[in-house]
Length: 272
Ligand SMILES: NC(=O)c1ccc[n+]([C@@H]2O[C@H](COP(=O)([O-])OP(=O)(O)OC[C@H]3O[C@@H](n4cnc5c(N)ncnc54)[C@H](O)[C@@H]3O)[C@@H](O)[C@H]2O)c1
Image (cartoon, rainbow, N blue to C red; front, side):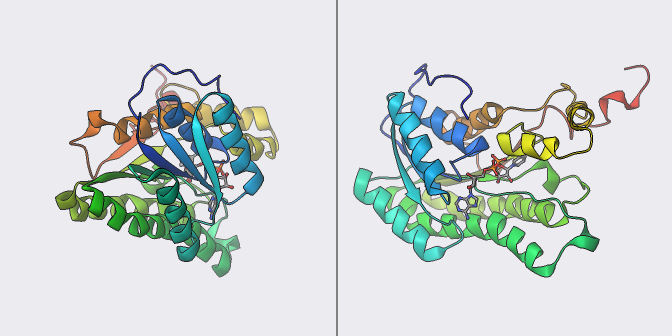
């Protein structure tokens, strides 16, 4: 999936090394591409080998620099080995985007304990495992940026998302704690809370509904801007938070949701 050919319009990350987890699809894919487009060398930590290799090839074909590493980001040893490979390859690390995660809606009454555990492990444990692994690297380097994928579901109750929303709320809290702990050694930690982003995975979920078009439109219309977000909308938030322009920004949660959580539903007032 790619929104448009990679065009070098800026070079905010020239000389920097960036890890993007879950870079084989959706938001992670577009985030990795855009970092590469602005000069970063990008390491793709992806569970699906074929997907990771493919996005690395796409970035290199566009003139960027990327390596794909097949790694389960919930696995402490695999993560340590992959970070070691990045450091041996490029000798530095500047930014980590803890993007890997997934939502599999399940009403509480239908959810099993292993399903709950899996959701928390994938979404939350991965953030801790990755962050703890890069902490000494950033400390020795005098700083670095950690960016975590939260979600508006961490702020707003949504049907079927008890486990997913709980994991995302916890990520926002962990982000703030890591920010106050990391500040003294120059580590900035922020998260992004996307609304509904039309990734291939989300499109597939829509396609499985009884009336996909009606479902699509009702979700799009929950946003003040009356559309889904794109992976690029979220990628740009990560790029800003990783950049020098955000040098004094830490412990924040940047909501990128077209106004879904701003207030009332757009059509809830007949005068609007
Ligand atoms: N799409 C949305 O509307 C939306 C909204 C809010 C938050 N988010 C969050 O943004 C992030 C990306 O969402 P997306 O929709 O692009 O996801 P996606 O499901 O399209 O892609 C996730 C990628 O992560 C990889 N992955 C899964 N488990 C992994 C693991 N253990 N180790 C390494 N890689 C793994 C998958 O193979 C896949 O390539 C997630 O954390 C998600 O919760 C998404």
